Image 1: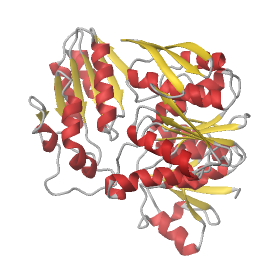
Image 2 (image 1 turned 180 degrees about the vertical axis):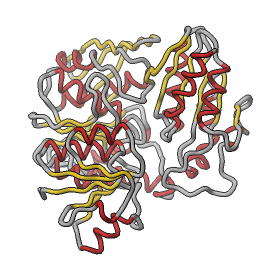
Image 3 (image 1 turned 135 degrees about the vertical axis):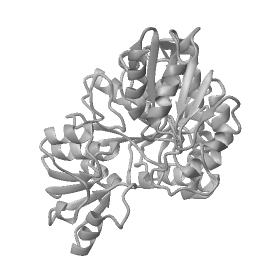
Length: 454
């Protein structure tokens, strides 16, 4: 590999993971981001030169410039690298390079990628396999989402949002679902499903695709792979899968079940709650078994999984009230979260603060978001977090509010004001959940400070 890389947008979850892995390979790394953050502080501690703000002077001559989909070609650092003729690669290409000598395990799907990837990494680590991994969230108990191990397996999320997962050639690809999303990019559900088949076509000869048996799109993918990709092995997981989930028991603080494959059955006791997590665990266990791990050792590994940051993460408590933070931003994710949080709340009330992510997604899924949030006792809506998109006329959180009786939405209200309102609404026994892939997580302090003086 080239001995010098510069990452534009280095503070993002995916980019910071690549930066950590490059440094672990002994490569000189620099980078920039628009604002300082705890991620940048961590990267500086690794010896990485990090600049706050984007400027042509930040880019070392002769370096490979790495960008994410959040960076556009009018970025000054991107532009100067292009003008100089420096090599410019997407984050996924850099990740493919750093993992080229490993057995690559790619986890894809519109949702469930982070948790499932983290579960696989945890199982392998517990089995003393020392995997490498690049995960979009810190694995609780490990403290990072990136690690370069001595083992032969590399685990990573595979991002479908912009087709960049086509840059990987996995040994095993786990598909949690093929539920349409990012239709602003793909146009329709058919094109979205087609790119997943292209992704499966990248699997190495004699490799494996493992699809969720409980998702219609994933099962269509499995069927097509069986018919058209004869040089790979096709497996399914969950209810009705050949890697089967049965005897499920859900509790406020965990989930139990039986995982089975061939003639082997093993009991599993998760310390994270939610039926969706039990299904994710089944897929992660199955992936590790298909990679040759002992089923009982794999089950023991999943039992110690403690979750990841921003996945129903408990971030504060006060006088019997609990505050959770979650990254959910797709209707299916939000519905699963509300179900999980409702169980955790017990006899208390569930108060959700939801920040929709992307104008296009809100426009497409407003009705489904309203349905997903309807299980909460009280919903506060923040303005849409546009991320890479520009505002669209007539598209706002009001689309959801109009379909969700009792939802509170004040256009233009800051996330801090909304956090204070949610905190004021809560009482002992209630739980408040901050939900979204934008900056809603920054409202934590406003909730906790309000609780401290109430």
